[in-house]
Length: 197
Image (cartoon, rainbow, N blue to C red; front, side, top):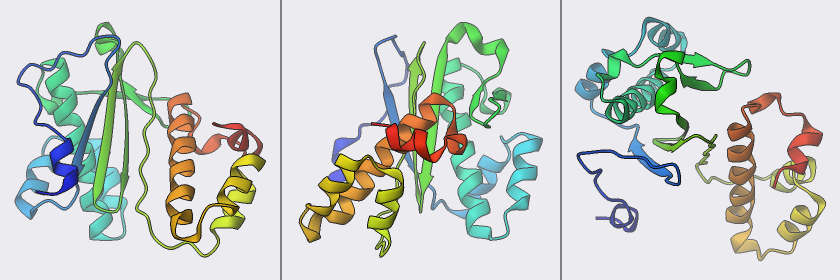
C-alpha cells in the first residue's frame, strides 16, 4: 500500500453530500481491457463518438475510463444507473448535469493527467479541480512569466532548485482549478489568467 492509498478511504454505501461538503475521488486510468469495455458500455453515443476521434488508443482508453468512472460516481449520488446520467455543457464545454437533475443541486469537476483522474463534487456551488503529472519543464520560468503574477514569478525564481518544479505545478494547478470552477476554461485570456490566485 502506498502513502497515497492510506490517505484515501473507500466510499460509504450511502453517499450523502451536504451543502458544506466537498467529496474528492480519484481513479486510475490504467484499467484492464475488460473494465474499459464495461465502462464504454455506459457512455452516451456522443461520448463514444468523441472517444473514437482520439488518434491514439492510450488517449481513447483514458477518455473512456475517466468518463465512465464519472458516470458511475454521479449515478451513485443520483441513485440511478450510470448510463442514465445526462449532461449539458456551458459555452466553454464545462459539463453539468442535465436540467432534469437540477433538484439535486449537484456540481462536479474532473481532471486527468497521465494515468490518474481526479473528481470533485459539491452542492449549490461551483467547483474546479486540476492535477498535473510532474515532469521536467525546461521552459518553466518562461511559462511562469507569461501566466503567473509578478510575485508568484519572483517566488518561483527564489525557490531552491530542487523544489522549483513542484512549486511551479502547485501554482499552475491552483490557477487551472479556479478557471475550471469559473466555467471559462481555456477561454480565459492571458491577462485574466495572470490575475487568478
